[in-house]
View (cartoon, helix red, strand yellow):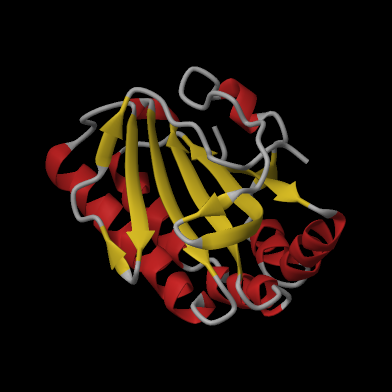
Length: 192
């Protein structure tokens, strides 16, 4: 099974335009050049884990959420490819995308970002979740990479402990031990 990806977002038309502008030249070109396959049905194939993708942006942690964005990626691999997959994952230009997206946010508004990786061969979903503002975009982007390194190390050391391993970035910190769950429901994202 080759590696697959898709995006989902929720928000008003201005937010959706900002997402499209941010994707152009950053994540879109990375996935194309890295020979990933776009797969809009990816979340539905992971549906026992990913429940209701409907929702509307709301207030979250003191910030008014202007929109939500999720990146879904899936792959199936053996041990050697696990490390290669995470190496490729960490090379995505996530920072420039988050910077471009958050630069268009009005002051006092935030975007909720989820990075969802489904490891098909072990039936494990890893979710990295954060809220970013224009002021915190660069820090949040760096923490996404660090959170993926922690997730990779946790899986290497402990294996699959539940169908979903959730790492949340809050106030510049990442939970070292993932929240373990049998399902995961994004707070705001819906297919687009």
